[in-house]
Length: 434
Image (cartoon, rainbow, N blue to C red):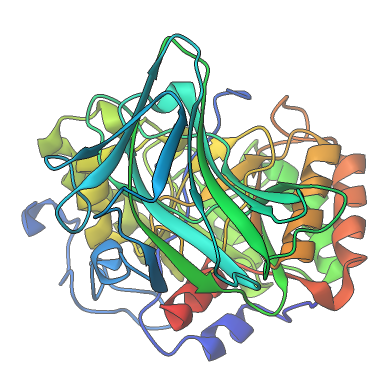
């Protein structure tokens, strides 16, 4: 495992604007006006690497079509519908003149496929998607070679909140492979599959693209809420292995006074920042999709300003409380944060590095040691990134302290095949890869 020394490594890597973090507390295993600013010029960067209130660009717009186009769905004649329904849609479009609408009723899955004759070795895949039934579906690409072996790239769970749904890009990592490796240079077909738990499924896909793979895998260790569990028990293990974590504290519960409470103090968070951790925005701990539109931007400004005022250099990154986001909230979040999000799953839910939606990253709840190890294994073997999420060792959504130590040991055992990084590091990789 490659070990970044301290946060100074990230600052040395970053030559552009800082980036926005990731989002969201899990539900126990279950993304305006300058007058609203607490004060100061919203476009004036503060010293010490702390970002400005507003970002320099809209990351979702700037990086909406990374990589190389592979399938634009303008001509669907190459696709066959194996199960469910598939048809062109000229009204709901991500790019071009039409998208591919997939639907099914009951608990029927949807399967469409096309033949392949391209060499797709060392490539990852991303595509734009939209769904009105996010709680019912998982989506994956299955590539099958001429000998019957296959590789599945899966977005395991979608937490985009209805009814205000919109497009986002998914860059799913490898979820499963056959024991005999897939011959990516000798592929026979591509399947696009929607797993449906019912009573209906409706998904649009568009703009399928390919991306080069990085030269190794990555893991992000994300701790929500700023609990003292991390400071007292997990941080010493991180320091021992020389690896960073992401901290996403809640301003209203973070103490700036005496130590010893349930949550870390501001001073302790600043200490962890100096030790190499990245402190990112979590903010007001309410699901943002429940807010009226007029309330969203003032909330985002107030939340980020607290992190700026306290000198946290990860303020351009966000972790959505309760993994809550929708179309409208994403439009506002893009003004204040560069990277983050979360479609969060209790199972393996990894991502490619160069093609993900900046504000809709996936992550896996760190409740089970075996699942977390599988995430690490997939990332190391397929040069993907896994983002693992934790809260406190005494909660159901977080493995025990002893198991966490075993996880760090497992990560360390990957050697140079895997690097522990922050969201800022991940964003730097994404922007360099376009």
